[in-house]
Image (cartoon, rainbow, N blue to C red):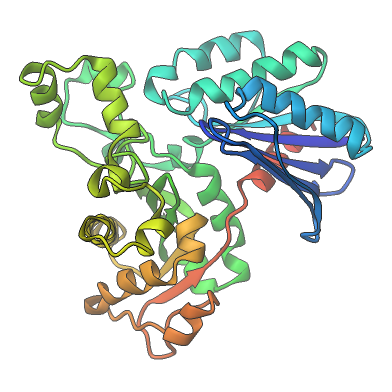
Length: 392
């Protein structure tokens, strides 16, 4: 394939992108950037493959930018300011692929319409993913577009793992455990062999800890279970999402508190998690710098629930050989990593305090029975490779 593959990761508050040389054997990164804080004061940053800044500025949009406007800005910058070769294809992160998609797929009108029916399963993400696809199609109708799915990596989970204790008709209708953050887990699974053979071939739990957060149990690099289920609300608490919740709470909110379905959705996706626990912020760094008791409580709950989830996934694996910390918190918060490792002392985990403080890898001590690694994730490179493969 000649030209470049543009990778888009459109979220609720940011637009991340990567530009890859499609003529290489494996797509090679040329540029990586994002427009962050879309709803407030957007910041535009672009760096090249060596990490050198190509653009860094605050955008004149005090009321924020829509996803479409942000995407237009990125496309215009790539075309005019960067002087890059023609874009040959666009790859998208799409959060939910439903039951039908265990692999990346070329986006056709029929596929796009099908993905639109999955919006209720991922209301915080799917609409933004689809909006980016629509905008590219408007600007460049002939350009091929490919979707890579966050749910696809977990289609290897057994039928037993996917089941809820609900009637068969609901299971067949799609009410089952899907799992998310699959592109991140696919990347980690692909590079584990470069870090440690035991972790790559054995029983490893990957902790994707960011504003969205989940854990995945890998057996020989294959997903066997994860903390998220039917939606991206499940599992551990996140920046503003609640994590696992007794369904009776939902009934109480609807029946006794008189909340509407939309109000409950707003509460669980936008007002809960670290933000709801602390009443201060959903940003872990800000909470770590606060002396407020509520901030400490939020972090305590976050760490406790992660340690409990590790125990559950270790049982699903029948033992544990390694942990991998990744994503924003996993890669950069030494204090959270330390507390999690300390909570796993009963499994033989011993932390190398100095290595952890340096964000080195491994962070486990030489006498630790469990290996602990810190690996930066790269979802965009997975999407670029998927796009090249789908388009041949």
